[in-house]
Length: 85
Image (cartoon, rainbow, N blue to C red; front, top):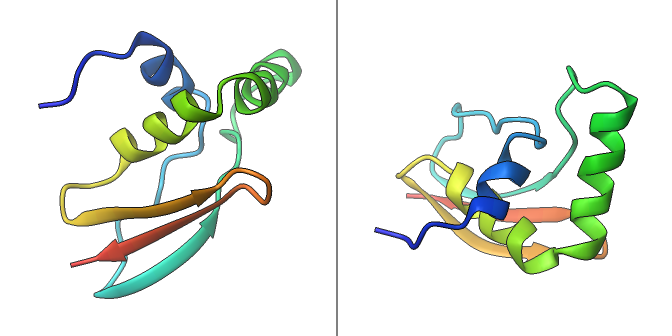
């Protein structure tokens, strides 16, 4: 079990949830703010994105379904690479 990370847990509330419809293979997706965030929420998303890149990546990893593996996260292009087993 992973260590508690309150900042990563908070960041995961700002990120649009990932689709669970992946079939086997590798996928690259763009990470986006939740669609239901107001302007202040979107600002908090981008602030967390720019100030806490490690916690941001940790939040993305925590959001993945158990059968999806975190391969890499490109912070500059905001792309997450996943592998569905």
